[in-house]
Image 1 (cartoon, chains in turn yellow, red):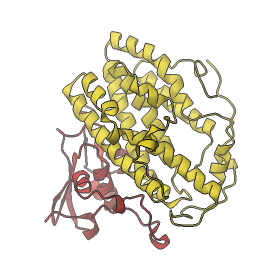
Image 2 (cartoon, rainbow over the protein chains, first blue to last red):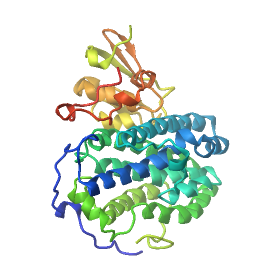
Image 3 (spheres, chains in turn purple, blue):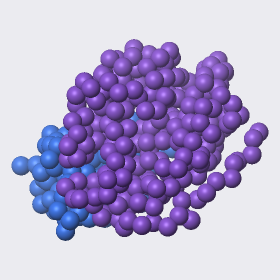
Image 4 (cartoon, each protein chain N blue to C red):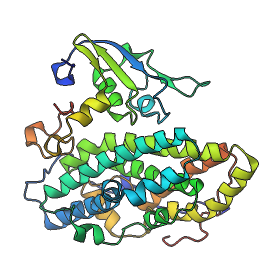
Length: 255
Length: 111
């Protein structure tokens, strides 16, 4: 098992912009504004697929769900994600960007795990998608508590808590699959594919942009700091249902 | 007329409908002391709802994906999840722009 990598903690970086400093109509430094747009573009591009592309985000899950109970739970999750999509669309609109156009949604997905969801071939893969992607969404929500950008600060707790609920749903899905030896064996095999993608969601450890974001009050932790916290949480949950986390450096694209 | 949070109606009871609860557990994280998980059924209930800020009860209700949380108030019965959805408006969004003097005010529902 590889040892945890050394990393810089966000708390060691001095914050320059206090909480709730900017609202969308304010004059703000161009780099800061660009950073806000960048974050919102990622969120909106990903989450607008729920209302705008149900053929990718809802229909396949309904076809693969093993029980009627799973239809209900998954459809409830999907409806809440639809609501989330409207947050980002509104926030971008207030910065003069229309995120509902074909052009906007034609941009490549910014995080590759979302492409993997489109090719998911089983309920186990759908479970892993939410296990990793929704949990990472919760981590991002937590980053925005006391954000310097007012809209992020106001949506932070809600986004954090609701995405945690989605990750809880994924744990329920995976627990059901792992309740039989055959299911657990199948899930263990699929984990080798999804685990590296989950850890890669936090980006490169040495990305220079992360330090600017922390100084500007747009997030609180560094990429590797978040990844290590995420890994510790995920590993404990996987162990609790009899799964063994793979080598955290195997098949990774971003270190 | 259904009760609305901004009217600040007195809460008389909080229920989690077991048949609708799908174990997302948002309520347990948002209103820690209010909600409790039954380990046998995996469903939550709200035996401690009097011990927390009512704002947390409303938020737990809005964040319950299935709308399993029902709040009985002196003005009537409310399912916060569906009440919010019913009044969903981009302009009243929790994250929508606000004047600076109201920027930190907590979100109190789309009414």
